[in-house]
Image (cartoon, rainbow, N blue to C red; front, side, top):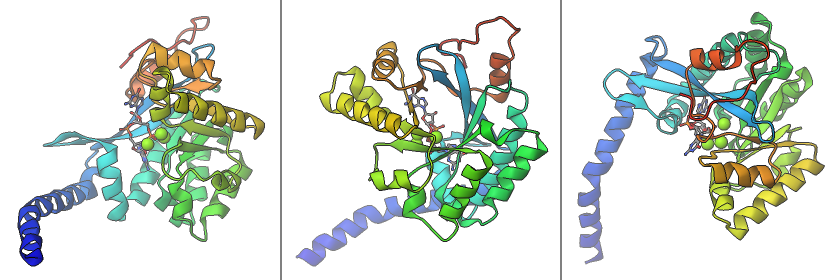
Length: 286
Ligand code: C2E
Ligand code: MG
Ligand code: MG
Ligand code: MG
């Protein structure tokens, strides 16, 4: 009887699993040509100083405009790119394109890019970053790379060496999505992090007066402060969320309340305003 039930399960789920695998394979094939077809772009989301509300930087976020499906979210295609071995070339394109774009911004505006754990399997990662910076005359101190604990879960012979090289040339390192996953504090000793990005689930909780979220943000902010790291609260969507994280001591905030990710041209226009104009981001720009 157990066998029958088992077979029933298989019969019910197989077509669904098959369809998903098919879809994935299809996307993988199309992703292989997306780069040369110009279907990939970068969107830029402002990172705001909590107290002054001035733009301190932009995070580059990958976008894939599929010819038939339209926008495919990165949470969907980045894992496919990783499995298909495409993330190294796509990741290099991200580094080069974002650096080329950031040259147009004022010197005090930083660029943040996301690095996949798998990019650390490439012993040339530091070289790629350095050459993109120097080609565009961009100071390494203006670049921040965002990594998740996934980098340490997938740690290989090059991982720590690469992080230390990046540190040594002045590139800043941020720990992204902090508070999700394992978030072992041991990871904080693996590199000289400049910043912790607090996951948006806590930001949501803080505005809803969740004692746990408030306590966790407080603890992260205190720890970051004593280790000389900055904090950025991710995903603030409302004024309440912004004010909560500002009042809890998060130095920077990022989220739809201030701005959705925008095109390179929009980002450029936003920071290229005439001298004297207050460099304050317009709410819900883009
Ligand atoms: P992430 O690095 O944590 O990026 C923040 C994500 O939160 C972005 O989603 C952003 O659009 C979204 N977000 C910003 N403000 C708000 C808000 O107020 N509310 C909500 N609900 N969401 C907000 P996006 O662009 O879809 O990217 C998702 C993830 O995909 C990123 O998470 C990152 O892990 C990955 N990703 C994006 N671009 C790249 C890339 O160039 N390379 C790699 N390896 N991964 C990337
Ligand atoms: Mg990020
Ligand atoms: Mg994040
Ligand atoms: Mg994320």
